[in-house]
Length: 394
Image (cartoon, rainbow, N blue to C red; front, side, top):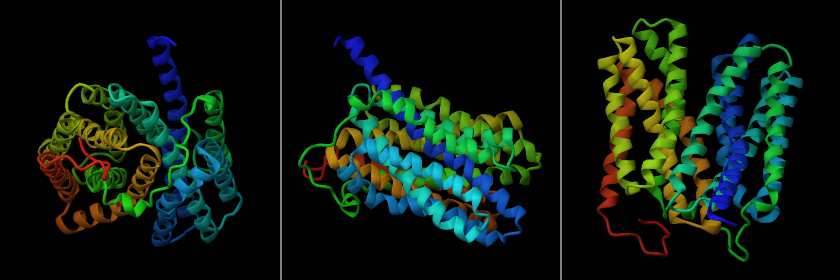
């Protein structure tokens, strides 16, 4: 196989894996607003709507210790196929059962299935990427995943929240994701033979900074989705404009991933991570100063969305260059768990800050969070490399 043919094969694999993994973000972007709207029409109290929504990220946390073991027993392909089918079946069953209490175990199971999809596919994407192309491949992967967050609400805006249409479309997407996966089944990376599964808790000691960074990005994602429109309303923007700003933020997270990944293939990756974290903190801190000028505020939101989300992409790159085999699988499981933790915490922390300090609490949380991350990454760079036994260091 020539080098060019080899690169085309790698990108074909990357496309199939990314298409499959995007089900994770599309299903979140679709189901959170869809089910919240339906529950609201059923006169379900807000506290129960919140608990209902929290069952999905809790399922992701539950999936963390399960996914590596299930992947070892059934293989990544079979586990992914089963998880895709389960997520589709859960969504259809939710439509059949108009009971918020029965929805919670179904959403928990859906969270477990989506968590397994994320763990398997992020392990695959790192296994197929060589170090000199890892930033670009994972940048592409991360950009498409980010687009999935926007596609879910876009589908809901097109078909509405009533009737079977959003549920049928939502259930069809995981099944359609099976098609590209089946075409590359023979080329998917195998699990290492004879290697033991590493406990997820043990991984916490191996790469604590990467896990904290993952939780911080999830916190920003959840906090922005919930409160960016409210922050805009507090500064006299129209309700529709607040929604448009969310689209602008997601556009930033989509468009900046590949360029930042390209830079990360040419510049020391810890340097790129430090700069992105510092720039995310600065752009968040700039929001109160730009919010009075709509076009300037939109540019700030665009840049902030791309910079903070790039940190997750860079964390995946560092994970792949530092670990392999079942340790890499466990690392991806730990990432999924920390995404769930950050997602649960996001709305509470940002909402609490806005209650305590007013609208400025929104950018304040993110400026402090990513400022601390930038300092932590910079401090880690000055330490001696970790020993091979720890599996972490560059």
